[in-house]
Length: 293
Image (cartoon, rainbow, N blue to C red):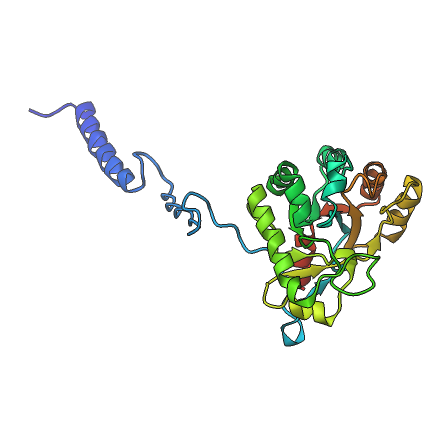
């Protein structure tokens, strides 16, 4: 008996669909015509913290002649209109009694303003500051808007005749920097940056040699805001706006008692610099641009 044509066609369609389905199994799903996506490798884990992904190494400069600590002052002038705001959170080792008496070496309003304006920044913090304000240090150090860097433990000078600061001896320079990193760890800062700012910005060849092997890049600046002990916010504002160039590093302070106008200055200069086409970055981005060039 001859099968009806429709039945024959139905059998052929079923067989063809079965073949397509078997082929589709290799393509991850029946009827799929796209090649399967390769599986993503599992993220690598840090040996020190099995549950955390190891952070990439921040950009840094190569050591100078004889292994001297490298010094960075500003980024490329031709890499676009970028500017890095840096804030020194100063507190010297002997200022504990002044803090206990009510003097404020922190500036929560400034940090809040940077957050509200969405301005990334690099904070150079002394270990003594982190010891005095551990919750604030942890908050800054864990906020992706900021990066926290080393400003020594004691904020004592690494050279003579440095703004009247007490002087740290050559054999204590490296331990002073290492102690600051230890205080950051105690405060709960997960990944402080391998950047160091000399107290007062004062350094010489002996100081650079003393820190050789620590793997830090010394970060200076090319724009002095003049906010330290200033009472005229307008004058500080003009100094910043007149000094900024592409790739600039601006130094300011995160200390209410020693720099009371800084928060007002930031509120004024940020919108103006943005109007001029500047983009705010952290120091690490400027260093990265420098190394790529």
